[in-house]
Image 1: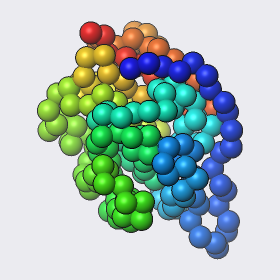
Image 2: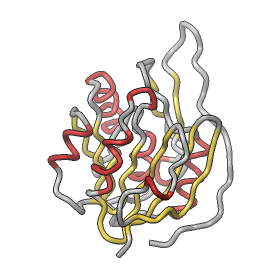
Image 3: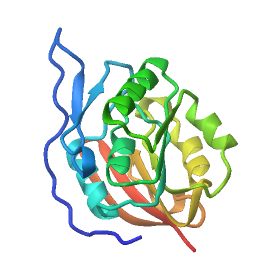
Image 4: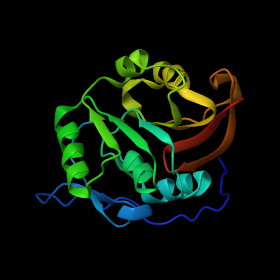
Length: 203
């Protein structure tokens, strides 16, 4: 996997209009570039902004052909659908909120995203049942106010193949002593209150 070092910050999330339709995010690359995903008004839902997603996929590269990807706290599905848009062979979206999961399925059907699978499940429980080393890329963006990261990080790390990548968003920057065993921090950035990180599992 090669990492592209270029990163071009761009636009953020379309703001909510009071009394209007749900917010939206636009996919920024791949076959579904500019396609819209709805963002429902749900507690703790905080879609990854456009400029952060663009930075991430500049780091990853624009062609994810053959990759198996997990978006563990899918929410709007922006991260997972971005991966599928760039050719990922399999993208698993996990979302415990039934309303959000149904919205993800509607987006999947509208985009004819055959490589995307959606499960209504608790992400921590699902990751605990999943076979180790199942994904080339795990996308981890749990709600900041739910104190889930300390449990979610090791669970997600176990699912990454050797040489694979783990993307993490958090309210605070990850420090080297707090990284999962066997992982190295490759890149990191900050956008407002969001710290984002790309880790690689050592071979």
